[in-house]
Amino acid sequence: MSDTLVPQLVDGLAALMLLTSFALLAQHRLLSVLNWFAAQGFLLATTAAVVAYGTNNHELYISALMALLLKGLLLPWLLWRVIRQLHVHREVEPLMNRTMTMLIALALTLFSFHIIQPIEKISHLMTRDSMAIAMACVLLGMLMMITRRKAITQVIGFLAVENSLFFAAIGSTNGMPLVVEIGIAFDVLIAALIFGLFFFQIRDTFDSLEVDAMHAHLIHKDDDE
Amino acid sequence: MRSALVQFFQAGMLLLLAPLLAGFVATCRARLQNRRGAGVMQPWRNLRKLFSKEVVMASHASWIFRTAPYVVFTATVMAASVVPAMLVDTPLSLIADVIALVALLALSRFFQALAGMDIGTAFGGMGASREMTFAALGEPAMLMSIFVISLSAHSTNLTSMINHTLNSPFALHPSLAFALVAMLLVALAENGRIPIDNPTTHLELTMIHEAMILEYSGRHLALMEWAAMVKLLLFSTLIVDLFMPWGMAVNTDAISLVQAFGLWLLKVAGLMIALALAETGMAKLRLFDVPEYLSGAFVIAFLGLLSFYMLEVGA
Picture 1 (cartoon, chains in turn purple, red):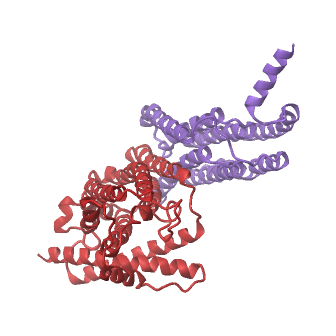
Picture 2 (picture 1 turned 135 degrees about the horizontal axis):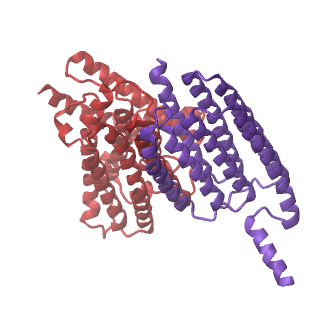
């Protein structure tokens, strides 16, 4: 049973992963962006657990647990606290028209599929099909980082890129060594904490979380001198 | 011979059941809102009333206005009779092509919009322009989501698509899930249901479908409304056909036909209950958000296509 079911499950989870990446781009409200981000964390944990079951790799269960705790619960909670304290749960203001962003996102997905296709042919892993999707998710996270004005959404974009890299690692190598993963997990955690601190600093200094406002502030200072 | 009879029975059933189904959705919605509702037969009673009333027409209505209800009704019924409901392989299955189906629906929409503009009132023109704008976005999404299934069946013919689904072993297909979601979103929009249009409202600012047929009366209005009900049944049958055809009759012996008929009714009723639940739970979208909703459906359908190539072709 597990011969056919596990690859199918991984494919399904990969498709859901792609869906969450698009949903992150499409959301209007910061809190729903955060919900989708948490959902992505849960998906990652599930994928890791399924792949662990399929490949009998017990270390991956630990990765799955870490993904669940860190990416599914802790990071969203941290960001949620920051959002509440900064009162920024209003709408996300993208730099570009939403439909345009979606079209670019589709183009990026096609592009990554095109890039990954030859690599997929030489792989024999059962999870090889999900590599193109992982690549697409990385690009989509980057797209999110460049099309958003608010620092918080940019950080969520960054964390989404990290999620996709984790997903790529599961898909292409059936998981990195546990030491590396623990290291990355702590890096991300610390990064999120530092970002959280930065948000407060940025708001105190510039009265806004909009990246453009910082730029304007600097130009303003140049004029004064 | 027998399959031709089944074909006629099927088309007749679609015609007769469509108002009942509309009444069923209305009753479900009423129950969900703690009202008693007018009953399942109410659309039939409305149609009977309208058919017995005289037709009142504006003095400058042209022949387009007069013929449009017949064209709309005929095109919709034609489209509905082509879609297999119980029997997979019917005499009409050669023309049961999804592109032809979408074209028939587009023909009916075209005449509806023409009739809306013909009479020269502001509402008719407004409704027509809205309908055409949303149709231009909805149609590609619908075709795209159907193409996801066509890709694996290597055909755009409904009968061969159903046969392909019936014969392939059960497996998880992420692409089909995407296609289903996109199709459901488009079906809501195409039938003027709640997040896009409210079929029960005559509130001038928000109506789309009702604005186009505002000037109709008597049997013309009856035909227009009947066509809308048939269209709802047509879409639910299409969704059942494409995504859950299990239990459809492959040959024409009595037992499998009765079974297929019962299952079809059950599946369509299930979809209608889901529709009533969705309509009760959702609020109508702002008109300017509708293009975003429809392009969202398009994106989801396209994701279905992509994930088909990414996940299912190589595997």
